[in-house]
Length: 149
Length: 359
Length: 112
Image (cartoon, rainbow over all chains, first blue to last red; front, side, top):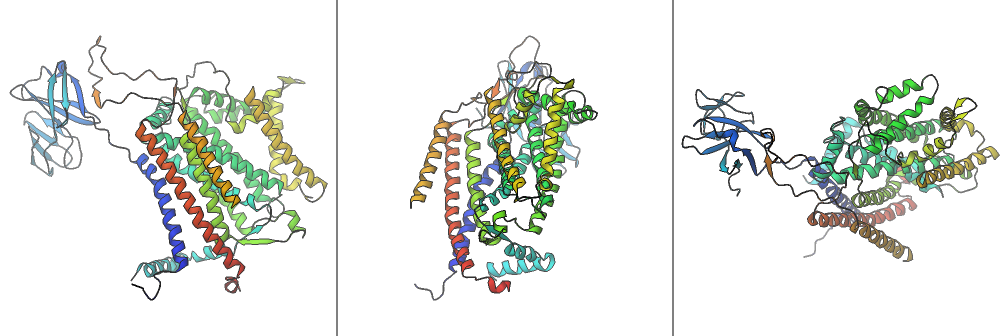
């Protein structure tokens, strides 16, 4: 189908080509810049702790540990097995504390409350605390993300 | 309501408030003289290109660099190994620094030889000399920042040189080092010079330099002025700018390619108590000065050899700064002698640098 | 035609030279970082298990770490130069047009 008038002039075409390819070059250069400026977050797949440090916990007790760059909590369940949480409030990322007398996690920033299993029970937090697996492997207490071998 | 109309009304909105079309009109009217020396007109903007790259890569490096004695070397090691593509960014910064200084020297010598500094462009020349000094100090301060053995020794030597200046020498060295010796304080001080003081200083000088060029127009070589050659002119926008972009693209591509295939390595962290390593040398652009200093004997007629050397170098720099006033008869014998002096200076600098590299 | 072939040959020469150089570049091979983290502070004295900071190597060389990165870099450089060459071609067309308008004195009337 032949159209009566051109969609653009030769000059516009040439200028468009120039702008387009300059844009392509800019994008090529911008890609490494953005990769540099936004580095990937380094969350470990697993953290190995010395079991001897957590062996003598009372059932129901909570002890802190370092989950990469974030705070974490180890919980010894009543049956002797271990559970771990990422101690970051699901509301706005503040570090939560544990109130042993009430057996609840508390976030001081906006009065958020979680029960002893990390489920959000009061205040603004929208989701429970992130749970991690904690297993004893020989001398170590290994905390892992769900799904990691 | 299509893209073209939106574009036009947007431009109109800004035009009513900023009046930037005056700038575009000026650029359209501005011309670049066409003659066998026009090729040198590309050197100025090439410096600007490399400086722009330095600013961008420098800011990116500053995101991860830690300017303390304990962390400096480690943070650069981290940039090179941990940060995604960090080694490329550091390599580009490294190579663009040398490229900028090479281009500054080319720009300097071409202006000297075609005598662009004749009246009324003396101030342009003088701000140019100060810009040269600023670029070299950029290189000197930046060289210390990796804090490895070589750069520590180079800085110790470099900051010791002003000491030979009588009366003020001690104070200058103390100011540069942040104390009597090169310490962690020197590093932090140099970092402050490198990313804050020098950029402001250079940008101020650059603004004056560029303003003067726009106000006075591009200089015309002597032979054209004398009427011997026909004057050709090229409009700055768009004819010259398109050609300039081609030059920029080629320079940029070459820089990135060299940076990607020849990245600089990092020596291990400097030990302040360790003896100087063998064969320390300053960066290549200081080699000719380094070699010149080596030539002077310890004492000449009861005066410290170093003091005389530093004096001669400072005297040469001052004469250099006032070159437009020395060259007041450019078309006569004196003018031609000064042009030959430029060639002599190039031969001297290159010769001394090669000599320094070989020993 | 002669100038064009000369430019092309120069380009091939430069690329060839750099490829040859790149193939011989020394590479540092840092240990494949295991994503597990040993808690360092809770070591009992006498136990030597911790993954301490590696003894600092004499020199650190910068280089792409694996074959994937190396290929990516070649692709990047190829793409960079392809874009630059296309842009230079387009710019030469633009320059031809701008010079043609200049000779025609197309803008002269505006200046008057």
